[in-house]
Image (cartoon, rainbow, N blue to C red; front, side, top):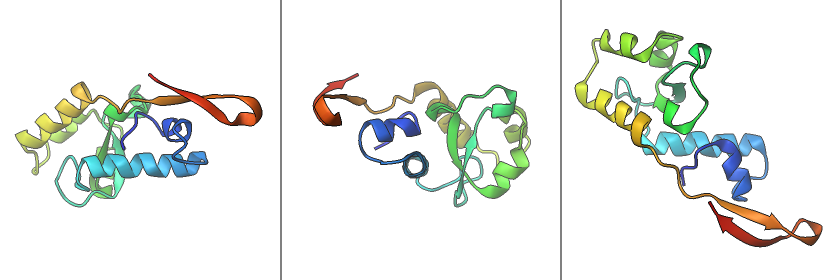
Length: 127
């Protein structure tokens, strides 16, 4: 299940701590990209911010893609539109998929648990 941010894995009671939630979130992003780098198509072993955080990019699901370490390092803080179009491995199909991801991604519905006495969930609300 791909949720919009790591904290949602804890709210959904799928993870018990922030580290586990972040690991699950990153794994879900990699699964959405079939474990392939969004840019070059090789095996993706990292997660990249499409619009770099240092340039104002958000730490949100539609700004994160599966990426190989080489592309992640090479892209650095550059704007993806400038960097990617200059690469020998640029492919229009991959670019369209990245743009679609940025534009159209809708996270799974989030269920919030209302806690009652002694912290036990008494009911849930789907947002």
